[in-house]
Length: 140
Image (cartoon, rainbow, N blue to C red; front, side):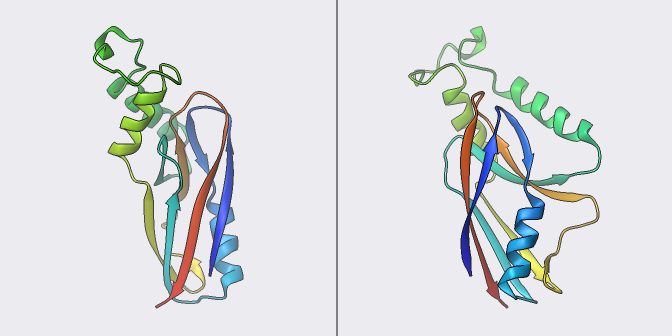
């Protein structure tokens, strides 16, 4: 079974969509198998991360901002791809450093996530976007 999940973002940050994924897996009827998620964009990524303490999300966002600042930062003068603004190329770099796909086992009809784990779209652009994630679940 396959679908496209749409996630609306309001700028850079982590957007949890675990409930959408759990619903998709449940509706697929697959009890044991493999879930694959793939984001169809080059300036955002996917991750499994803690969903209990919002400080984790804030710290991750701050880490990546410090690791790859906007192209108008003096340390980033070497960047040439700036047509879509100072967050464009840094967003591509962040996406290259992180995951664009996830594979998660399905057990007992649910993604086999740990107690504090959630599935996130990691938006690297500053502007709002509607992002699309291809989801596929297969029996295993």
